[in-house]
Length: 279
Image (cartoon, rainbow, N blue to C red):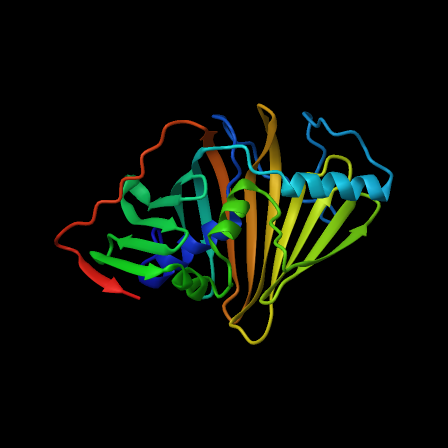
């Protein structure tokens, strides 16, 4: 199956948001490398941080990294995606553009470069053009949470796209330091966020979301692999995601091209012949 249809297409899009993309410069991605045993990231050849032994210093460095505002204005990425679930499986090419704090734009195409869907997400809305069915769906950001079954907001998705850990004042934070990694657990009202970093360079290796209460989705794991040096940043060029619950789903992204802080356009033209649905 080349391009998933209808709700499968929407599901594929939102899973791509969860798995995320990291800002970087134009490059070609290498093959993914699995995250090592306790979710530590393999050492990057461009690592600039020195090994840290003091727990207090390590926590301070990690907190500073998390709280530092992201240094980017725009992002562009092109990735190959492989998707599998009990309902469907397939592959597609995904194009993603982002403008800091305001827009996430995604296009999903299949064989012969035929576009199946285009999506525009803002902090308070989600718009989906389904070209397979000639429909447009207009909804609030809560629909994003409904489809993913995870109470994530725009900032959560932006942080995932940037490969960042996100915290807010409502989180209770706990640190666990292991031999090769540091795990940060932040407990909120609806979600528990678990972030695992490599101890030697503080690169993010895994993000885990766990839901509170009854839900069709009980959690999701995002693995960040194949870090590449880009200017002063480290780019995770390969991603693996697993969503747990009544309909377990897997998604792999392999980036072939990515850049940041370049001029971008966010074309989202709705055909007058398309049927508009409101959610």
